[in-house]
Length: 215
Ligand SMILES: N[C@@H](CCC(=O)N[C@@H](CS)C(=O)NCC(=O)O)C(=O)O
Image (tube, rainbow, N blue to C red):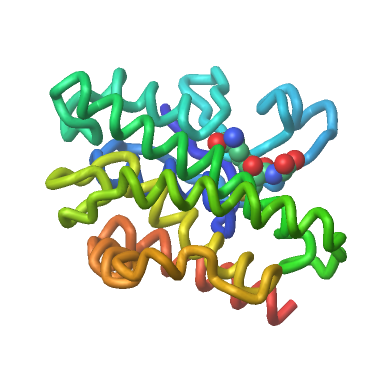
C-alpha cells in the first residue's frame, strides 16, 4: 500500500502527485497533512515537512528522494530518459529549479502569502541569488516542447509546480517577475496544464486555495 501525504497547496506534494499520476502508479492520498514539529508528526517525516509517502507502513520524505524511489520501484512509464547524460541533465534541471530558483524565491513567501514583512536587504539578496538561478535555468531549459527536450520528465513535474510560485513571489515581493526573461514559460505551462495528470493536480490546488481564501 502506497499513500502520499501532504496538502493540495504544497508545490512539492503536487510535484510527487503528478509524477505518480503520470506513471500510472496506484496510490492513496492523504491531503490533510500539514507541516508540524510535533513529535508524532516528526516520527513520520523527520524534518516535519511534506510531502512524505507511506509504503507498507514505512515512511519516506523529501520529494526528490520519493520520485527517485518511484522510478526504481515502478520502472514502467519512466520519467527519465535512458541515456545517462540526458538523465543527469534532468537532475541538473531539477537542482537548478529547486535549489537555485524555488528555494530562493521561498525566502519571500512569508511576505507574499502570510503578510510577514521581509527586509529590504533580504529582498536584495533574494534578487541577487535569483538572477543567477534564472540565468542557469535559461541556459539549460529547452522547451522542445518539454523542459529537458522531447520527453516528458520529472523536471516538468517540478517546473509546473514551482515556476508559477516563483513568478508570483517575485512580482509581489520584488515588484517584477524575475522569470520575465523566459517568455516561453507561459505556453509551456499551458501545454502541461492540458495533460490530465497536471490538470487534476492544478484543479485541486485551485479549489484548496479558494477554500482557504474563503475561510
Ligand atoms: N526539500 C523538501 C521541501 C518540502 C517543503 O518545503 N515543503 C513545505 C510545504 S510546500 C513544508 O513542508 N514546509 C514546512 C517547513 O518548512 O517547515 C522536499 O523536496 O520535499
